[in-house]
Image (cartoon, rainbow, N blue to C red):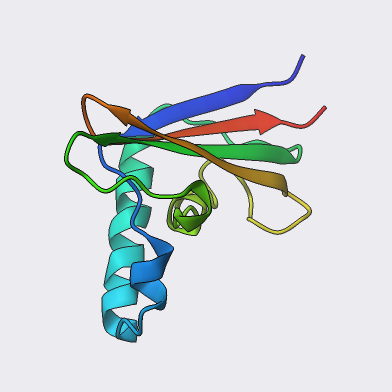
Length: 119
């Protein structure tokens, strides 16, 4: 039986469009550091997977917030925060697949991450 670790972050991931829109590198670096820290704090009680994993990332957007397309989620910001804590690295040796979505409406903003060991 494969192991699974999941956690929720009380915010939605930023849009890749905003990042690719010519955002200054210092602002991108600040955003990445912020999301790495948020991810680390959300992973209390985490364990390090030795086997390769599949990672699934989805978001819930509250009423009034712009609903993003799944392929517009900046999931790398969270996945990089998992390195050394839940996964050894985000290379193909340790991460087989990353799936995004669904992006749904809900009561509050949140990002859900599920890390599942590949059998």
